[in-house]
Image (cartoon, rainbow, N blue to C red; front, side, top):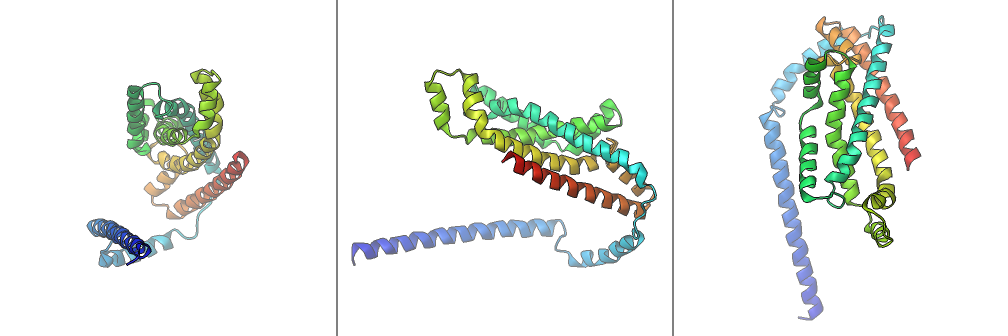
Length: 268
């Protein structure tokens, strides 16, 4: 057998082994998904079928939407919008220095790197809804606890993405700045920051989209905004008004999504 034929056989054998390994991995993942679905009764089609009439009844009671109090929803909507903007701004401001401390290539010391990572992990491990409940108990009802909850939780997420962007910068400009005698701060400002600014802007805009949707939920725990109005209508079972509020939220989410798309194009 020629050397070329032997090499081709070895190549086919390695390809077959890799394919079998990938197939087993996919099957293992599917098995885990099926097990989790069975555990939470997602595969209990009898129970799901029993819930369909109740959903139909609720849908019938929600139609047509009642926009009688729509004028009273403008102020809570503005509260929700302001909450998302302020929370995102707070997250970005604190995430930038945290990201440089939590990135391996810019952290001043391994201990600082580890502590920064632990802080970011801790902040994003607590859901913003739980933080909202805590801050409502601490500072009272209103938009402020919502801003604090969204901001702190977002620092954990935004800081992580910022740190990963910093770790993937091109080292050539960094080495050039270092060879030119630049200080550490000058290297960060002139060689690292220009490379990551587009990613920073992109992550910030995406996070604002998320925070706007999350801020509607924050109102349900007393943090103000349109979610508070939604929860009030749900408590008294005014389902037509609930449907109307959900439609208003949908319109606002669509507008925020369109605006964020425009902003992302501007920063490219």
